[in-house]
Amino acid sequence: MYRHEIDEQKRTLKLWVRRKKGNKLLRCSNCSGLCKTIEEVRDREVQDLPWRKYQTTVVVEYYRVRCPKCGVRVELLDQLPSKAPFSKDFEDAVGLACESAAARQVARQFQLAASTVRAIDQRYLERWAKTRKKSVLRQLGVDEIYLGKTKKFLTVVSNLETGEPMWFGQGRQKDTLDSFFRDELSVLQRGRIAAACVDMWEPFTASILEWAPQCRIVYDKFHVMQHANQAIDEVRRAEFFRKGGPLRGLVKGKRWLLLTRWVNLDSEKRQLLNDLFRLNRRLLKAYLLKESLDGLWTYTYEGAARRYLHNWIDQLRWQRLEPFKKLAEMLLNHQEGLLNYCRTPVRFGVVEAVNSNIKALLRRGRGYSNLRYLLLKAQRLAALKTEFLVLRKVA
Image 1 (cartoon, rainbow, N blue to C red):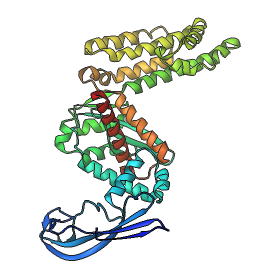
Image 2 (cartoon, rainbow, N blue to C red; image 1 turned 90 degrees about the horizontal axis):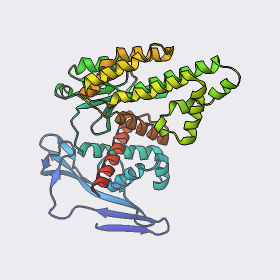
Image 3 (spheres, rainbow, N blue to C red; image 1 turned 90 degrees about the vertical axis):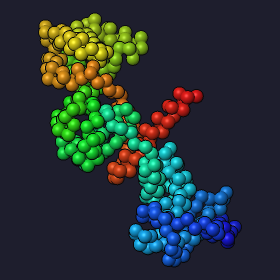
Image 4 (spheres, rainbow, N blue to C red; image 1 turned 135 degrees about the vertical axis):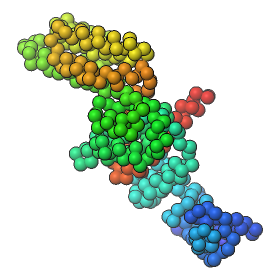
């Protein structure tokens, strides 16, 4: 630093800095190659972190150099990561603040516009993503998130081993997932995929089998249990309209109790369900069928799992539960994907956890128009949670 100015009334601090004598290691900002010839000396004013109550501005002296490959370029300076008038330390501070608060909140803290904070945060995340090591993709997770009437669906591709999202695509058609395999993965990377966890949406399955034919399709347990919950809900509605008088009042208001697992209910709610089952045998049968279906994923041997599935379907023969008969037909049509879990076990909860993180980011940010920015935020959130778990385990 060779010069400084302090304005105590406006609470501003301005510093002039330049490199030390003898420090002539010049690099090209385009190719990072070494340069020897200095074409021009310029000054650039950037905002830096405040010093106590003073707003700090730094005037940095930099060179325009002649690169043997690229010609005349600006030299590469670690303190000036972009063309924006902010230093790297300032952008890192804004990026760290955005990890725990919304962009508008950070904008009020640093006295910036919300759009400027989002741009700084994206540059901060891009630098973080550029330096981190990419994991090998062996187990793939594909799911969609509903964004509303205008944007419809967002396809999310995740790495099940690391628990991080890898790619976002607008829509949920076969062409959407085709663009991921075609543009984001090489032939070698596609050949390494051993398993893919998806729901029963046919376009996703068709795209995976086309681009990675060696991959085993494993249907997500949570989506199968969601279909079972829809079946028991249809039985509940049918029993509500079939019964009359005080029996109809007994069925009313029991929807969430019937959708909840028995192990997650307290004694009072279990007693309410027992009173309901004592007077309505169909709801009892439907609830027992829904609860027993969860045991399909406790088997590690394919033959035992197949036998359990067929025994579960045989229980529906004389029950007169039409929604569960439709569920049984769907399970038979997709039983190969259900039994693939015994051959290649995958982590079912990763896809739902990634979707929950994305929905939390959308609520906090009130929506994102830039999918690249949303992807970087979700990856950073997943990586921070992973690092915390590792540190807690070591401690």
